[in-house]
Amino acid sequence: MPVQRTPWGDFPNVVVHSNLVALCRHPDYAEAKEGNLRAARQVVRDLFKPQAVLPRVDYIAPVVQLDVKERWNALPMALAVKIAEQTGARVVPTMVQSNVVYHTLAAARERITQQPAFTGKVPRGTYLIVDDVVTFGSTLANLRGHIEGHGSKVAGASTLGAGIFAARIKPDPAVLTSLQQRFGHELAHTTRALGFPPGCLTNKEAWFLRGLAELAGLRSAGAAEESSGQPAVRTRAGGIRGAGMAAGS
Image (cartoon, rainbow, N blue to C red; front, side, top):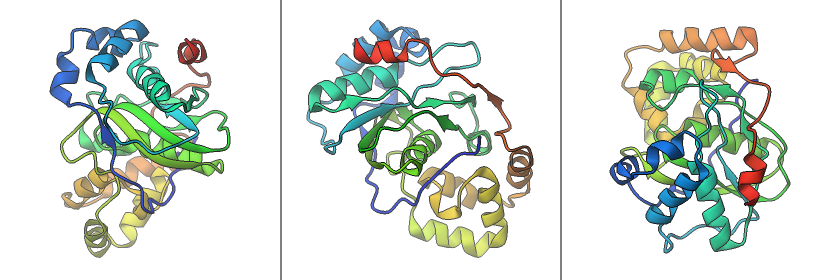
């Protein structure tokens, strides 16, 4: 299943509630990452910033994904439930990541070539998308694309932590211009093979690409996906067991 992305328009910076040091050092962090919803709720209670300004939306969509050992990260769901309690929006757990991309410990190149794809029903309305951490922004960008590709609108994103300069997810126009000047049609071919046009890159993806000497490696990885019609990573047909129950509890 190819990824979807939509033009950024005036998409705002990601609303970040804490920082990576506090998140990773929290005593319940490891259990939360391995699917313990109780632990995840404790992490969120301790790190959530109630004064954070969030857009008014109909729905909260957490990133729902399983890792290679069939464990799911409970932190996005716990954060989504907390925001729903604060705002009155409804948590929608029906959109799930359909592949495993190993992003937690991945290098920059793998974060770009191994794009997370999403599947699942999208109730019509406005959304806030939620993850535990934003690093390159690929997961949030692709979940947003899945939602907007089905006719709804994503008004913003929120996470517990963020990598350096990662909260700005919309790419700098000057960086995109520089990429176009350096790589021209090669850039368009590379990103199209990954599933989107150059203007839909995230800010961190664009900065990384600008630092490369050439795009051949990325182009060949994308071409492999394009020819097969599937991301070049492990895919899964099903969703996450218990996600709906977690959202409603």
